[in-house]
Length: 395
Image 1 (cartoon, rainbow, N blue to C red):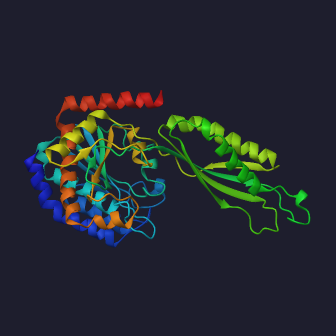
Image 2: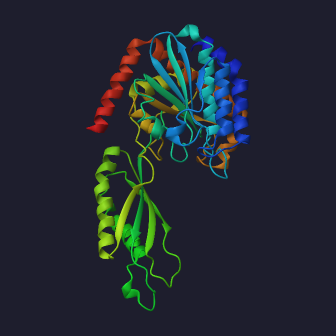
Image 3: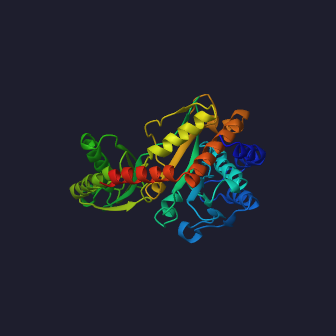
């Protein structure tokens, strides 16, 4: 364990934990994180980072992203990612008020230990994770291209931390059906029922479940199904989401989904229209060398750590992982197991236990970043693992 880094973390911990409370008290939803993003960006600026704020405002359509850069001589490039948006009504039920400041703490401690490395450290403030995550747009814009590492931790619960938060790929469709209105009792034969077409589309998808790739999850809701029952609905709109362990599987599924919509529309004399709800969320390109390093560092701290759980959700960190070696560990804020997106996890972020965990998480992030900066052999192994797993995803 690097004692100098540990001391720097201890010194900055009170400031960082005050940010946890600040974000808790000022929850801001996706794209509206004005106070939250400014508080994190200003903390980095005080630590000597050159801060670009707002960042990618035109591309994102809002001004709550930031990029903070600490240039410390020639060498590798590493990025620490920070999230800070809240859920509607519930506040920080996903713990972003905790793991966003955790990223800031790790970065501030590294800034105090500049003599320990040579290279460029960036902190990327990535808003909107709970909706159309900013990373979905940052990744294809090349923000992470050429990075030797992108790293963050996500809040979790239970007695153990985890080396990685695995994720499924996700594709969202908005499917519209257009028909013909008519009186539902007086002349229904003159109408073409768009709601029935939408319902049959969902029935056809359900009938195709047995031919979905293993691990595919389908869910959907009717957003618009007509105005009143005495009128044949001439318009219907459905939102469908498909998750899969592999982005490649989603691409193959696309043909089935569109055929089901086309068949339902044809049968009801309607027409269909497809729109992507947002860019695809990618599954994680897991890097074994990074997972092993994170596990080693947790163990050095005497913290319980386990291998990743099976993927149960999606994250825009997956899109980053297709661009550079990436890891998103899970840091437990409470020994009592509880679900994400709950008041229980939200409130656990304010406890003394969470504060202790914050120091451990920052140490793990910091030591992993230092290993990338200072160990060429490790850096090359990480790059080799990344390229091998990425090729298997695309192959």
